[in-house]
Each structure stands twice: as C-alpha cells, then as structure tokens.
Image 1 (spheres, rainbow, N blue to C red):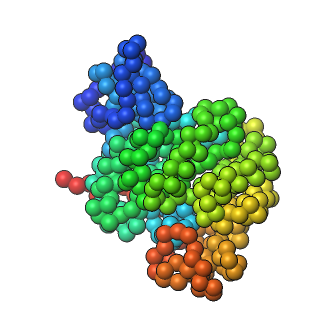
Image 2 (cartoon, rainbow, N blue to C red; image 1 turned 90 degrees about the vertical axis):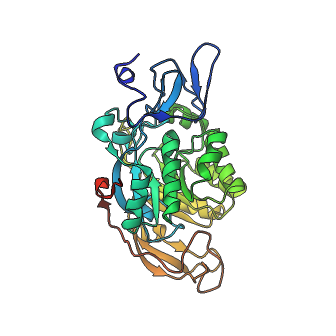
Image 3 (cartoon, rainbow, N blue to C red; image 1 turned 60 degrees about the vertical axis):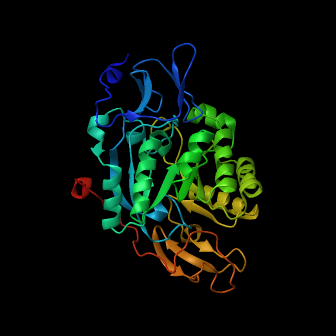
Length: 372
C-alpha cells in the first residue's frame, strides 16, 4: 500500500462512495467508469489518482475539493455555438484518466498534492457562486470530469436548481453506462478528439481511439447535449493531410456537418518538449480541409486569426458572429438563431442576443459564497 493511499480514510471530507465498479474473482475490484478498467487491491488508487479502494469499496477522494476557480468566456472552452459571449465559472480537480505526453494542464491533471492544490467547494456553493456572479454556466474543466462524475453530477443538479447550465470539457474516455448518467445532467460539452489513429492514442495518450468515437456517436444520436470537438494539432504527430481528411470525413459521415470542429495550436509542454509549436499555417490548412469535406463550422485556436475564429453562414457565406480572440464584434443572427441575410438556421444554442463578457479572466474565491 502506498503512503498516499494509507493516509486515506472514509472519514476524510473529500472521500465519498463511488459508482460503477465490481468485485473480481481474484479479490481485486474493477473501476468501470472508463475503458482503462483499473483493478485495485485494498489501498490502491487508479491511474486517475482520485478513485481508490478503501474498506473494500471504490471511493472518490476529491469530492468537494476543487481548484482553478475562474470566470472565463465560454469561447475559451472552446464553445462557439453555446451561449456566445457569456461568462462561465470554470473549475477542476486533480488527476486524469489519460496519460497524454503533451498535457497542457499537467500541473493540475498530474498533481499528487491533493491538500495543497485543493480548496473546498460544495456543489451548492459552486451553484450559488455562479448565480451571484452572473455566470450562465459552470464548466467542469482543466482535468476531466469523467473521473469525478459523482461530484460533477451533484454540482450540475445544484446548478439546474439555480438556472445555471453545465458544460463538460472532456477527452470523452468514458464507458457507456456512466456516460448515460453523466450526460443526462450536462447541457453542453467540448470533446477533445486527440487524433484519429489508434497508434497516437496508444503511444502518446495511453488510451484507445474507439471509445472516444463511440461517445461522440452516443452524444449525437441519443442526447440533447450540444457538443463541439477540439483537436490539438502536434507537428509531425497528428497533423498530416491524410489524417485530417479522415478525421473530418468521419465527423461529417457519423455526426453530421453541423458539429463545430476546433483545431488548436500545440506548444511544447510536459513530456513532449521535443516538438516545435504548431505553425499558424497548419491550423489554416486543417480548417480548409474541414470546410472542403463538408464541416460547416471549423475554427482555429490558440492563435490570433479573426477569420478562423469567426462564424459564417454555411449557405450565403456572410459573417454571422465576428470574433477577435474571445471578444465578439459582429452579430448577425436573428432572435431565433438564423442568418440575418438569408434566413438559414445556424446550428447551436443561442439566446436573443450575444453576451458581453469579452475576454476577461476573473479568479474567484469560493469561500465568499459558502453556504451554511
């Protein structure tokens, strides 16, 4: 038993019973939240670090213990077709169920310093903070809400009671049964489709591609969740013309042309510092490939590109939503979400007008909103 696990106790405030696990014949228990299927003996943690075996049961060790509280523009998630211009209260926990060598949030997703990283935030406190701060939604982000689904679901329920929506920012590496429960409580998601080859998922992320594709199909065919896709393009790893053609073609064939796709720039980080940053031309090329393959809404990210950030009518080509980084300019949607020039619907979840949050990033101290 590791020193970390030995210190865990069911009496700890952040430890709660977890769902989706079963006993194995050899005495271990198996976590069934994600396709990693960690098999644990007493005192052991899963790869995600926050799910562990204590007292012959699986527990979540980060319930109510969050980090990174900040109000962001919803476009930063990135979501360009979900309540544009509105503020979202973002937070995450420690740990992750993938092992991406290029992780851009490794200080949180790979953290093992639970006590120094975390701050207490109950679901009710998070929901009340979002309401008082005027946030239209709460985002479960920075690491992956898959691994803290019990906490995320309870927070989403509390948010719904306050009229606040819920956004999952996720790698989509989740089993079918927990996904059905989790996404019943989500209003929107950005799913990180990290590449379109099994080799990349296996060698770079420590996972598999097919479960992510299955989740995307499930979201499209069986839920009302608005979702968008993000692919971080890494030079020489997942940015070939052939792979981008295959990826975008699959999106159109399996999910339809209205699912927005974001291509974002990589910067050397974590365990992949031997690659150069992504040239802007690579993102422009990827966007062009997506559009030529029938994707109606393709974007670039992590670079300054007004055209690549903005939304255009897929029918007449007119500018619908102008963006400069996270600041909205032009707004040419009618109150019911149609192009003001030709009347063609724009896919998404829009209100009668845009929000005006802009590009601000505002840290939040949750203790100011703690409820008795």
